[in-house]
Image (tube, each protein chain N blue to C red):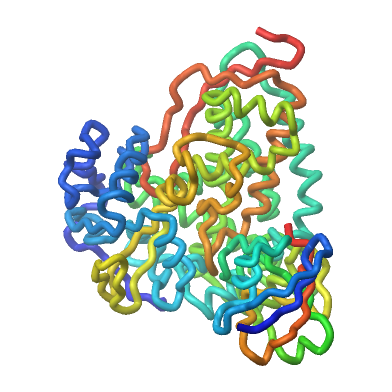
Length: 106
Length: 434
């Protein structure tokens, strides 16, 4: 388990115990985090699990591939430098203490 | 071509196969399981498919049928959970060479389209056209959709029956499709016709295979001209054709390679929304208490739209092909086997949707319906579709007390496209209660 600090779409803070090996999206979805819709079920095809990775987190979550980049361009909320689709991030111990803010997904 | 052309040597394409066992008259609960052939348009046309699905979900959720001479052996998945698992697993379940059980053949060839491709080629081609239906573009489209919806609804006759499919559903979705392609507006009904040509066995349209190929040839010719016209540096237009013509991944497409993607975008943006737009009117007519809910609270319209789409499921299934031997619920699926993921059944799975056979516009998990698919091939136009449906209901509520369906709907004989050909409706204007 890896602890993720989450600010949900309504601004509330949570600590999510995310199982290693799962996607960050599925950990957030299973924790019932407000704003994670994940309409496509993790296919990188809907951009409704969009999050902002805070602090130094971007160095730890890896790079977005070209498809994710396209999807981020078409996300409902503003794309920022720290935008990622949480379905494309695998939870590992290296993410311990990661801080993420859920974007306004719609 | 990437995929070896497949032909069915025994098949006479001029004949239209109908299952001798799985018929509208048969008892879905009495038929031997192995005789159930879900890829049979007649049971969908007669609305008997739900009973077959219900039985299979209970008795045989991973079902095998090998007596259909047109498509050969295939598996059917009918439970929500199993469909979800396969749809999100592109590594073991390929979308190539086709996402329909029936082969889409152009003479000896198959038209490649990105819905029937695996990564990475799928990602490149889908990525090329994605901006046409993205949220930025959607904001512009919203106003246009409303303007057109108002025009079309304001012209409807009141007090006398008319065909809602023709006057509203086809008209609105075809106008939108013309916009997404930036297709010559006055010729937009060609798009509707080509869509029908693509999805309908020619014999049901009174056409030969050759006629069909000729029409598709004309479609390709028309689009090739537009494609070339719009292929120039600095073309920032966000229509499908400009996007295809100017993206490095798709700029060199020609012939059947181009036709395949055009066919996909034409059908994807046409039949689906059209049939949800028609079906919604029928469902609201049949369920006045549900209609009352959106009259009382318009903020429920987006949820009602999702429920309409779940309840209709305008595309009944998508096919995958196993890339390796796989076991699902104890059944041995072999590499190369065809698998139909029946969204139409998953959307009525009682273990996921309580009272699944009821039309309930405010059910809590309605957004989880399967009609757009899941995974990398999820419908890319879902937001445009939802916007069209939402706006049509908002504008209906402004004008009409109710829409009365006055005849049995005429339905399409098809196991893939779940459609309504004609829906006779009387529009009762507001303030003029019958």
